[in-house]
Amino acid sequence: MTLNVGVIGVGMIGQDHIRRLTHVLSGVRVAAVTDVDLDRARTVAADLPGASVHATGEDLIADPGVDAVVVTSWGPTHEGYVLAGIAAGKQVFCEKPLATTEDACSRIVDAEVATGRRLVSVGFMRRYDDQYRAMKAVVTGGEIGVALVMHAAHRNPSVPDFFTSDMIINDSTVHDIDVARWMFDDEIAAVTVLTPRVSSKAREGFNDPLLVLLEMESGVIVDVEASVNAGFGYDIRGEVVCEDGTVELSESAGAIVKGAGRFGGRVPADWRERFVRAFDVEFQTWIDAVAAGGTAGPSAWDGYAATVACETGLRALASGVREPVTMRERPDLYKES
Ligand code: NAP
Image (cartoon, rainbow, N blue to C red; front, side, top):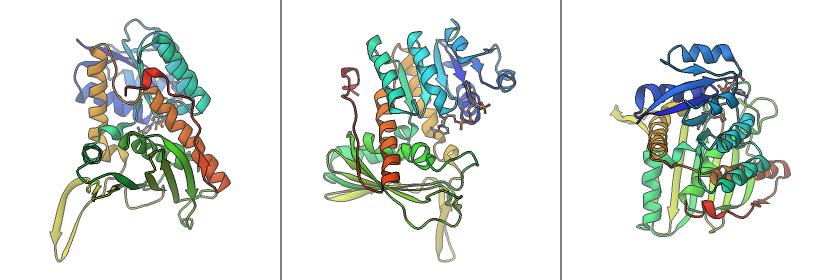
């Protein structure tokens, strides 16, 4: 069976996902696309045999030829499309964020819970990265004891002009927030944000880098150094300190070269290079699950929890003090995942 998906928003990541859905993965075809920029949608559809172009996301969702929906438009538009997908009873893969506010995420959670089944998957692709998975296997396997601390770094080489200072938390650090919840099967209890010396490369009004401290309910503390002007490459670091040892992400890309008394290797250029395989595995897993009548991957609850933690982080950045995370009760629908 071939799953016919419709893609809402064919910008940077929308086009990258269309490439993988069309040329890399199996059991799927892109049957429909839309974008606020309809010319862009038509241009993208021209390379997709038989794909239709819809004037709006709502039209695409209503198309009987679309079995499942991929939302890759700009974050503030996600809520409306995810709710429309749920109302149509279709499976939805939504790029992060699920929605940009706690209230909007909560409305999605309510709508999904009312259907009694999971229809929403959120694109936190690091959960599918081989290295993070190996790290989680060690942490949960208990071979080096109970986890105490995680050190993480999220270094972007640079960011485009539309990137605002808030996005260091709700666009970059949001991935580390999801990793922390997933790594330790735990919720975040409080967030503190420290502001080190500002990089001379930071734009006006940016606190860059940030040190984001996530206190997990278990007592584990995760420190995330988030910077968006690292210059040298896209550098993702992680080390979990346990009672009897440590586990860390290895250097990611290519071979280690030794020569002339030195050793070195390649630093990925950007997130697409670093996580290309994670995105592939994430989508193939979702496609296979949807074809089998279900879904897979981070849930609407995970999207809700990440957005709440981001909002708390922004509050902590503004206040300069530790801010507790307050979440609604987790509905039964999400208690098994
Ligand atoms: P982008 O290049 O700006 O693409 C967004 C596309 O959606 C643009 O073509 C935009 O058109 C279009 N759009 C805006 N409003 C729309 C609407 N109401 N209906 C339909 N289309 C609409 O942004 P992007 O970088 O691809 O990011 C898209 C989403 O993916 C964001 O939520 C982002 O956070 C997420 N993302 C996730 C990752 C990850 O690591 N998982 C990485 C990158 C991006 P205009 O350009 O005309 O506004």
